[in-house]
Structures are given as structure tokens and as C-alpha cells.
Length: 608
Ligand code: DMJ
Image (tube, rainbow, N blue to C red; front, side, top):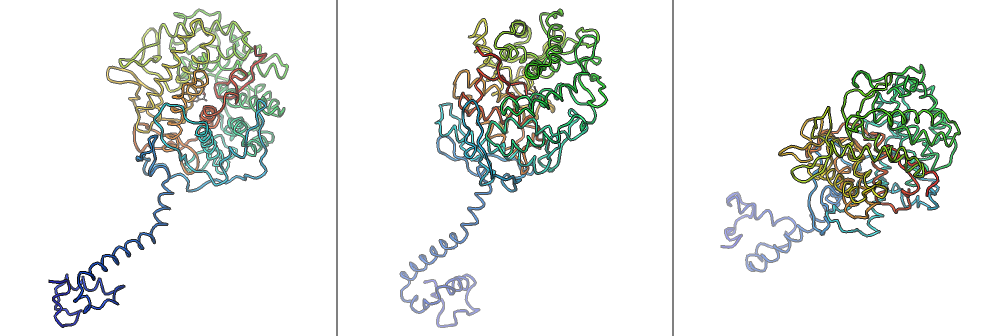
């Protein structure tokens, strides 16, 4: 029986036909109405063939008509839809659902016209090439590479450009939605003014980001930052208590670095003004400064929570680079005198088991609670001992001796190896070790690498640099987002993982990338560039919002909730280290520049 075999002379639309036959008949009656039923009745096989051809023709044309829609969907999903891996295969990346808006939907606009090229170390930075802002800011579109083989120079250059695009996205949205505020809230599109900078809008992101803009050749943006600083950054505009430490590393360090790079004296004058405003914080019997100061009233104090209002080691020990350079550039000895006094006190005081506790009383000069850490409260004290020696042209032997001895003793007391063979620094409290290492401590891998050539046992320092950096990479590798936790713990069944709610955030921190960058420069092992690229893509996937970059609250969740803060150090440090990781060695040569703990480069004095 043929398809139309039962239409025995009756009306083809006869209600007598069974339902399926009416449907079939109607289906062929539209575009193919020119085929007579009679003819079909006689030539059924040929007719069927024709019908099949028509069917495929319809299918093809409808697909064609829908194509633009499909392709625009693929475009809007971008790399998160299909990402080719190193082997050329495709796989899906999971994007956080509901929390972070999809990238690429809205971009803050800044003009791209009138650019000039930046010059550094006699090397011209191709500002036009670097901008990546011409066609709007797009998310990273590169492959997720798991290979540790060296990638080509072209690929490295491409990655570097992608980091510049990230900087543009962070900066442009800060300009559009938070200009003059300290930081940006990238989800709610407004300013964020954390208490460490006082109550006023004091442009922390502008000052912190300026040298990164300069290095990346984003000269229009650098000029906008420069003009804001020249017109608006005045101590008289400050309000409330600022952290002496944060003010130093971000403002004074940022200004000095912008001065060192651009030679624009306005930056030096501002740094001088800022440091001068902080001086009253040092008016203690020991010269050890208080933690916070009201820049207007000049009142200073310590935090009540800090071991009975003690000063904090990392804070009082992270002034040396900036203040020594400031003295040298301004000719004002007062800055140098302040830091020398702190240094001498720390050098001469008795140390429990050779360790430097995190708390010290500025009235008595005695240690507070014996808590020792390479992370929060301790970290950059160790960094500044070594870097002060480097900065001095390797002449500050007191700093180098203190560094060598301090590192020997923290290793003796606090260096541990996990069951799985990961090396880490635990935290020491009165002889007991807590098996926890902060993300903040992840700079230590790079510090070991940087200091290895000058160590008594360079091989040991190199090994430590590699191993601590590996541990930090592991803490990233083990998360759902491939972002590292704020703190990692080690126990019988726990290896480099955050286990408590407060451990699990990622606050756009730079320390792990700092170590990747330094270890790359020191060893040329391509895995550090690969690790940095993996992390950049993880940031792009999980931290990028429509209006900037946000930290996330739980790196172990596939759809982490954003914290809605774009930290100023993300522009000062995180993106700068990633940019430098994909740069040639003569961009901020480590023989000529020392980076402060906020990644603000200062020129080495009388390099050997
Ligand atoms: C930065 O401000 C500095 O790196 C500081 O030394 C530690 N904390 C942040 C970044 O995590």
C-alpha cells in the first residue's frame, strides 16, 4: 500500500482519511503542491526520492536561516563554550552560574586616542600593540594548556597582551564607576572604601595602578592617573585613621615607583608629602611606629586585637625600601633615621629560638605574644631584609645577615613536609606548630629563588624556591576553580587545602604569581609560565565580572559567590606579575629594580 494508496477517488482532504494520512498529505501539500497526487500515484519510488530531497533542502535552508543566531550565541559564551586544549581537542569549562555576570556584555569606555609610547630601560614599549582596547575588552580566548613545554615567543606575546586586556578591563571600570574612590565594587558598580585607607575617597587604586599602567604602555591611562594625583591627592583630603603600613606600601611605594619610571618630580613631591604626614606615628619611646594614624589630627595608635596593642612585625619591617629611597631622592635624612632605628632595635633584641615574633610593644620594645608566621603579620619583614640589601647595591650587610639568620631559624622551627611530600611553613605559637600556610606566604618561593645566588647554599635555596612554589601551585590545582585558597592546611588526609570557611576565599591575591614570575626569571623553567597562564584563565573564568574583577568566597565551589571587591593590589601586583611573567627579562630587569611588597619597582642603588 502506497502512501496515498487509500485515497480512492475521494477528496484528498476527506475527513474519512485516517489521521496519519491526513497529516502526511498536508505535509506534502505546501511547497510541493506542484507534484500531482495522480502522478505520484503512478511513480511512487521517484516521488519518494524527490520528497526526501525536498526534506533535506528544507532542513538545510532552515539551518542556514538560523545560523547567525547560533553563531552569536557561541560568540557571547566565548571561550567558556568550547575551549581547545593543548592537544587541539575541545572540552567545556564550567563557568559560575548566577553569580558573576557573563563577560563582554558591557564595557566602560575610555578614549584610545592620542596615545604615546612608553620608554623603559631604553626599551620602547609598543603601546599600540599592547592596548588591546580597540575592539573592546574581551575575555581571554586562549587555549587551556596543560603542557609544561616552552610555548613559542608568539604565544607568550599573545598571553602578555591578554594580561594587558585584563588590566584595561579592571582600570576602565574603576574609572567609569569608582573614580576617586579607593577601590571598585565590580558587581554593584560603585566605589569601595575599606577602613585601611581611612574614611575619605583617597584614590588608592589610582596610585597603586599607576606604575602598572606605565609598564604596560597604557599611557593615556597613566596620564589620567598622574593628573588625578597632581590635583587631588592631598593629605588635607584624608579623613580618619589610615594604616601606616598600607599607606606606605601602596601610596608612598606607588608614588616613588611612578617617579622612578617616569622621572616626573610631582610623584616624588607627593611621596614626600605623604611620608611627612605619617612621621608622627613614629613618636614612641622606641621609635617603633604605631599601626594607624589620623593624618589630620596626627593621633596614632595600635590595634587593640594585636597582643595588647602591640605593633606588628610585617608592618614595622616593611618601610625600609621606600623610606631609604625617599631619603636618597629628597636629601631628607629624617626618613632614613626612622627606619634605621627600627632596624637596629630588631637586630639587637633577644629573639626566642632566633625567631622574630609578630608582635612588639612600641613603648617597651619587648616582644608580645610569640606567634611567628611567614604569612599574615610576618611576611614582608623577611622580604624587606633581603630586598634592602639588594636595593643598597649589596652593601647593607646588616640586612643580609639578619635575613640569612632569620631564614635559617624559621626553616629549623617551622618548615614541614606533608605526607605527600609538599614543603610548607607552619605557624609557630610558643613552640607549637599549626599546620597552616597562608596564601600570603606564597611569595616565599620567589624570595628563596631571588636570594639563592647569594645564599651560603644556593642549591638549597633553589630547592626551597621550587618546592614552596610547587606547594602553592598545588593549592590552586586542587580547587574546582583553579584559584588558590586564602589559607591551606596539612593534616593526615589534607594536603594544601583550605578546610575552614575563612580559608576558602580567593581575594585576587598576587603572592603565588609573584613566585611564578621570580622563579621563571631565575630558572627559565617553562612550567612557571604555564602555571601563571592557567591562573590567569581561572581569574578570567571565575573573577571577571561585567564591570571589573571580583574576589570569590569559595574556590572549591564550581559556582563561587563573588565578594564584589576589586582590590587595588590586583592592579598593582597581580596583573603586574602576570604581565612580567610573559615579558622579556629586560622589562624591569631584576638586576636593576627591586619590587616593594606591593610590586612597586624601585631602582637598585649603585648596582655592582
Ligand atoms: C598586598 O597589599 C601586599 O602584597 C602585602 O604585602 C600583602 N597583602 C597584599 C596582597 O595580598
